[in-house]
Structures are given as structure tokens and as C-alpha cells.
Amino acid sequence: MSLLVTGSIGIDTVETPHGKVQDVLGGSAIYFSLAASMFGPVRLVGVVGADFPEKYLEVFKGRPVDMAGLESRAGSKTFRWHGKYQGDMNSAESIKTDLNVLGEQGPKIPASFVDSKVVFLANTHPALQRELLGKLKSPELVVADTMNLWIDTARDELLKTLSVVHGVVLNDGEARLLTGKKHLMEAGREVLKLGPRFVVIKKGEHGSVLVTRDDSCVLPAYPTAMVIDPTGAGDSFAGGMLGYLASTGKRDGAALRSAIARGTVTASFTIEGFSYTGLVQASRALIDQRLSELHRMVHFD
Amino acid sequence: MSLLVTGSIGIDTVETPHGKVQDVLGGSAIYFSLAASMFGPVRLVGVVGADFPEKYLEVFKGRPVDMAGLESRAGSKTFRWHGKYQGDMNSAESIKTDLNVLGEQGPKIPASFVDSKVVFLANTHPALQRELLGKLKSPELVVADTMNLWIDTARDELLKTLSVVHGVVLNDGEARLLTGKKHLMEAGREVLKLGPRFVVIKKGEHGSVLVTRDDSCVLPAYPTAMVIDPTGAGDSFAGGMLGYLASTGKRDGAALRSAIARGTVTASFTIEGFSYTGLVQASRALIDQRLSELHRMVHFD
Image (tube, rainbow over all chains, first blue to last red):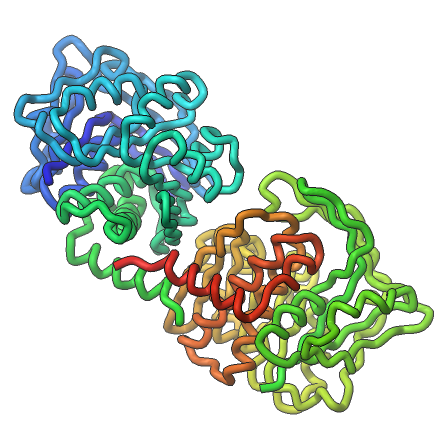
């Protein structure tokens, strides 16, 4: 099934206890696409400014990512983010955020993309998420991400978006903020009341929880030896998850479980290097190897 | 195989967001024994003061817990603890700790207990843990717990104890403090260098990690609907774990995995009520039911 992602493309500066990288490629659409492309073709929709260095796109060479939806907007500047991770690196402090082109109108969806069946609406204003979704003809599996900012400042819009998507991915803090429930299973069940058929709550180094109307699944994170830079882990998770689902065409409970396991191991590569350097070390074979290890890790009789 | 626990018996006052209980039965040996007795017989070694209400022991009626090692010391007072859990309840603030009889000489081990094969040395001064262990004839599987206090103030004694035990259970903060390693797998491997063949790192609501010389296992916590009082969760975990191992007589990697799964679900009952009221709702049948659920929860293809 065809897979489309709409999300940010940015120029990041990131500091972690392991070092600092300046002006590197980032953004949810980038991490998602690279991750999903390990499983099958991806259609990328996003917008950059005239300052965006074309060489940044070389990382997509040889990968099945259709860039027809990448708009370069003359007279605009690319989204920039400067973040810093400290201590356990479970969350970033935003030192500087320049929305730039992301503060303007949303990206266009090319005619060749409107038949996309599996859709990831990466984090952006929930009204824009719905606007983008509205341009697609017959999406069959739509998953949205969001963030604290929209939960706080655009709750009504967010609730409308949640009512029209099939799945949502949130981190634990967002799930608690959205629902007012501290207990994650309870928070998950509350989210389902808002519309989605499933919710994935990401807990960083502690793994993730999948809650559906009749099922739940809890998976630890794959224990990587070195966490260098957590940026993009969540979008890589979503990319691995939806890349897998799109490639199999399945959407039942068992497939969702398989999918979050793929998301888990895909994200484990991302955090092993700055920017996308960890993620691009991954391959389908290495992903399968970590899947076996994860499988063994959670096994008991 | 015969199973012995040495640990505290206390009178607790506990406050959580769900309420407050005053002067209730607590202590590591209590939680461990109740938990382990779901799997087979347990020998309890501990000391209380003359103020200890005999009726507190009624909870052991009909359970295979041999109380021959329970010493009631005339002229002494029972250990008392007043703790308060707030927010996510992942750790308690100690409002008051009266060591009382625990500050005196250690408990005696009855002659009928010295042939015990599986031993849990619950948290106490590491020198006392070794002293108690020295009184046993031929223990085959010895597991110790410890705490920040001893890591900080009696590290040399603790290192000596770690060098003579087979396994150790720690929480995540203790593992990091002991080893200086932030990453739990790394911390686990460092602990193994100190002597033990395996280490279990407990992460509260995030489950636990088992690290052995050639294996690792990561399990989420069983997601209970209501966390009322986390007191005793760690000792119940150890009780379920060692109760299972003692009942099967196995000690290989697969058995350790099975054992931490039993520990996980046993502890899930403990936190559902104040003091031991949650734990005593458990039965072997209910434990097996949660085991199946946990099994299903972590399953993926």
C-alpha cells in the first residue's frame, strides 16, 4: 500500500553529552522517510526555504523515497531548531526554534500522491493536519503525531483531528497531558474514546505501549549500547511502524504488534548517532537481527 | 529446594495519593515470604521487639511459611518506618525511620534452617548479610538486595558481599550509583564484574532488566489498573522470583527469565493495595492468569 508522510524538514543544531552538531539535516519527515524506506516506498511531503542545501538530500539516493512532494519555496527560509539534551537525554530543551517556512501556508500535495493509502501526519498544527488529510482521496490508515504545544493551545482543533484518524502516536507526557490520566494504560484508553482505533504511547528508553479497543502490547526499547542523540527517535519509530504496515497491507492487532516492534528497533539505530547518521547504518538485515534479539529479550516461559 | 529469607519486619505508616495507613505490618521479610509462599515453602528469619502485635502474624495462617526464625526480643522495639509517596509514586520519601531492634545484633538462624539451599538476603548492612550467610551450611543460590545508603557508606563491605553471592537485585538508581554507569545494560554488566552471575535491575512502573554473563532479558511491569501503594513491590518481586526458582530447582538462564516474569506479576498484586492487602489477593491461579497476559502483552511476530 502506498505510504505518504507530511512533516517538517529542518536544519538542526543539536547538543548532547556526546557532542554538538551544527546545521545538520533534521525534521520529522526526514526521519520518518528514511526509516520507512527500509520497508518499502515512501512519498514525502514537506517544504523548505531557498536556503536549503540541495546536498542534504543526497542521503535519499538509492532509497525508495519519492521527493515529488518536496517544495522549495523561493523567498522563504527553512525551519531551524537548536536543541540540547542533558542527563538521561529523555527530553530536549529547545534553545531556539525558527519556524520560518513552517509558519507560512502548508505544503502542496502532488497529484501523483493523492491516492496514498497509508498516511503519517507528523507533528504540526492539528488544523493543518486535517487540511492535508482532506486533500487525499481515499486514505485507509491515517496516523497522527502531536505535541504538548497543540494540546495546550489548540485542544479543540486537536480533538477534531483525533476524531478523523485511525491511530495516534504520543509520548508519555503528551498522553498524560491530553487525558489527565497518570496511568498510561488508562491514558491510552481515554485517547481511544476521542476517536482513534489505536494509540501508541512512547516512553523513550522505557519502550512503548500499544492500546487498542481489545488489546494492549508493551514493549521495552531495544537496549542500544550508546545513546548519542535521541533526535528523530519518535519519527523513526513511526516510520518503521508504518513502513512495515504499508509493506504488508495488514492492519489487524497482530500486525500492529509486529509494527511497533519494527518501529522500536528502527528507532534504536537513530539514537546511536547524531542526526540521521545512526539511522542510515540500519538495513533490513540489521533490523531483522535486532528484532530477533528483542524477541528473545522479552521471551519467557 | 529449601528457601530462606532474612530481612526486616516492621510496623509501617504509609501515605500515598490514595490515602494513609498507620501501624501496618511491613518489612522486606514479610513481603518476600508472602510472595514466595505462593510458590512453595519459605523459612523466615527476622527479629521484632516486644511491642510487636502477635495478631499481625495471622496473615501467615495457612501459608507455608516457617516462622521458627522469627525472634521476638524482650526489651527491644520493632523497626518502624513512615514513608510518603507522591506524584508518580516511583520512590518514597522517608519521613521517619526508627531502626530500633534492627540497630542491635542480627537475628539468629535456627538449626533447622542451616541447610537452606536458596537464600534471599534482603536489604540490610552488607556485613550483616555476609555474617548471616556464613551461618548456612551449603547454600546453592544466594541473592542479595541492597540500597543507596550502603553503596554510599559501606561500599567496601558491599563489594565483599557482592563477591560471594550468585545474584543481586537493585533498582535502577542503585545500579547507576553502584557502577557509575547511566545506561542500565552497561550498569548491569559492571555489576557482574563484581562477582554475581546475574543481576536484576528493577525499574518500577517500567519493569525490569535481567543481565547474566551471556544473556539479557527485559520485561515491562504488569500494567495494573490501580497503583495504591508501592511499598514492598521489590521484595514481592524477589519473593516471586526466588519462590519460583526454589520450587523448580532450576537456575539456568531460561529459569531466570521465567522467574523474573513470576516476580513481575507477583509484585503487581502488592501495589494494588496498602501494606500486604493487595498481595494476599493473589493466588497461584491469578498469578498464572497475569503471566499469560504478560506473555501476550510482549508477544510479537
